[in-house]
Image 1 (spheres, rainbow, N blue to C red):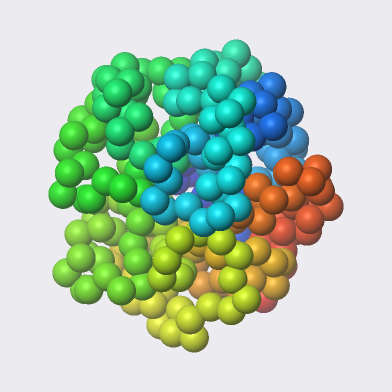
Image 2: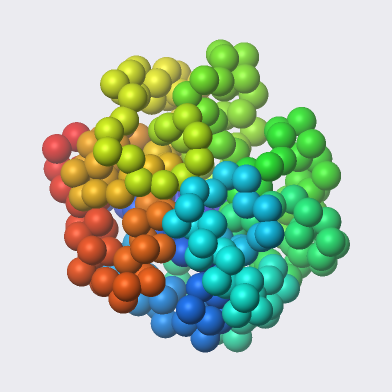
Length: 261
């Protein structure tokens, strides 16, 4: 069992739900990366998803896209983010999951990326623009570095596709809860419960809900469906405003979700 999976299962074994915040590395300057990560882990998050800014972020909604633009303007890149993480690697106690696109990895060099990412504390990787059928491009190097390649499964995936994705996903299965890009939502598809129940028939791996989750009530609601939640745009927005009270409320809701499950 990988360290990422173990971290999620440790939380659920204690009766809580996993909570993974997404942050955009370099938004506000690379110097903010260390205090942000250390504060989040002190608040009790299960893992942290590290967004790498990219010029063509096809899966990102306005909030994260704008954060990525600010990070790029501040000089953040895949290389500089990994270099910064390596400077305080020994202080990081939770698994880090990098979210980046395929082109930066190929430009970096797949084998070198895997080595540098591991040295930076990266335990998992999400590549939203890489189809499952093309994952062999990077998977061997990731396996050597013991980095999980997390796969996303959508609401519209047919049964055959779900079977392939859940079988291939490592660390956890990322269940996308909306059709479209990231960003806050007022409500979710009423058939989500059936969707998660269906996913659970294909795998025993942790299943985490992500995309659009932005309120404590939604963290509670969606956390009950699987092993936990991933919150992105709301975290990015709160960090921009230095609004830690909102972040703490979202984290606390993951514990309430477990109580009501």
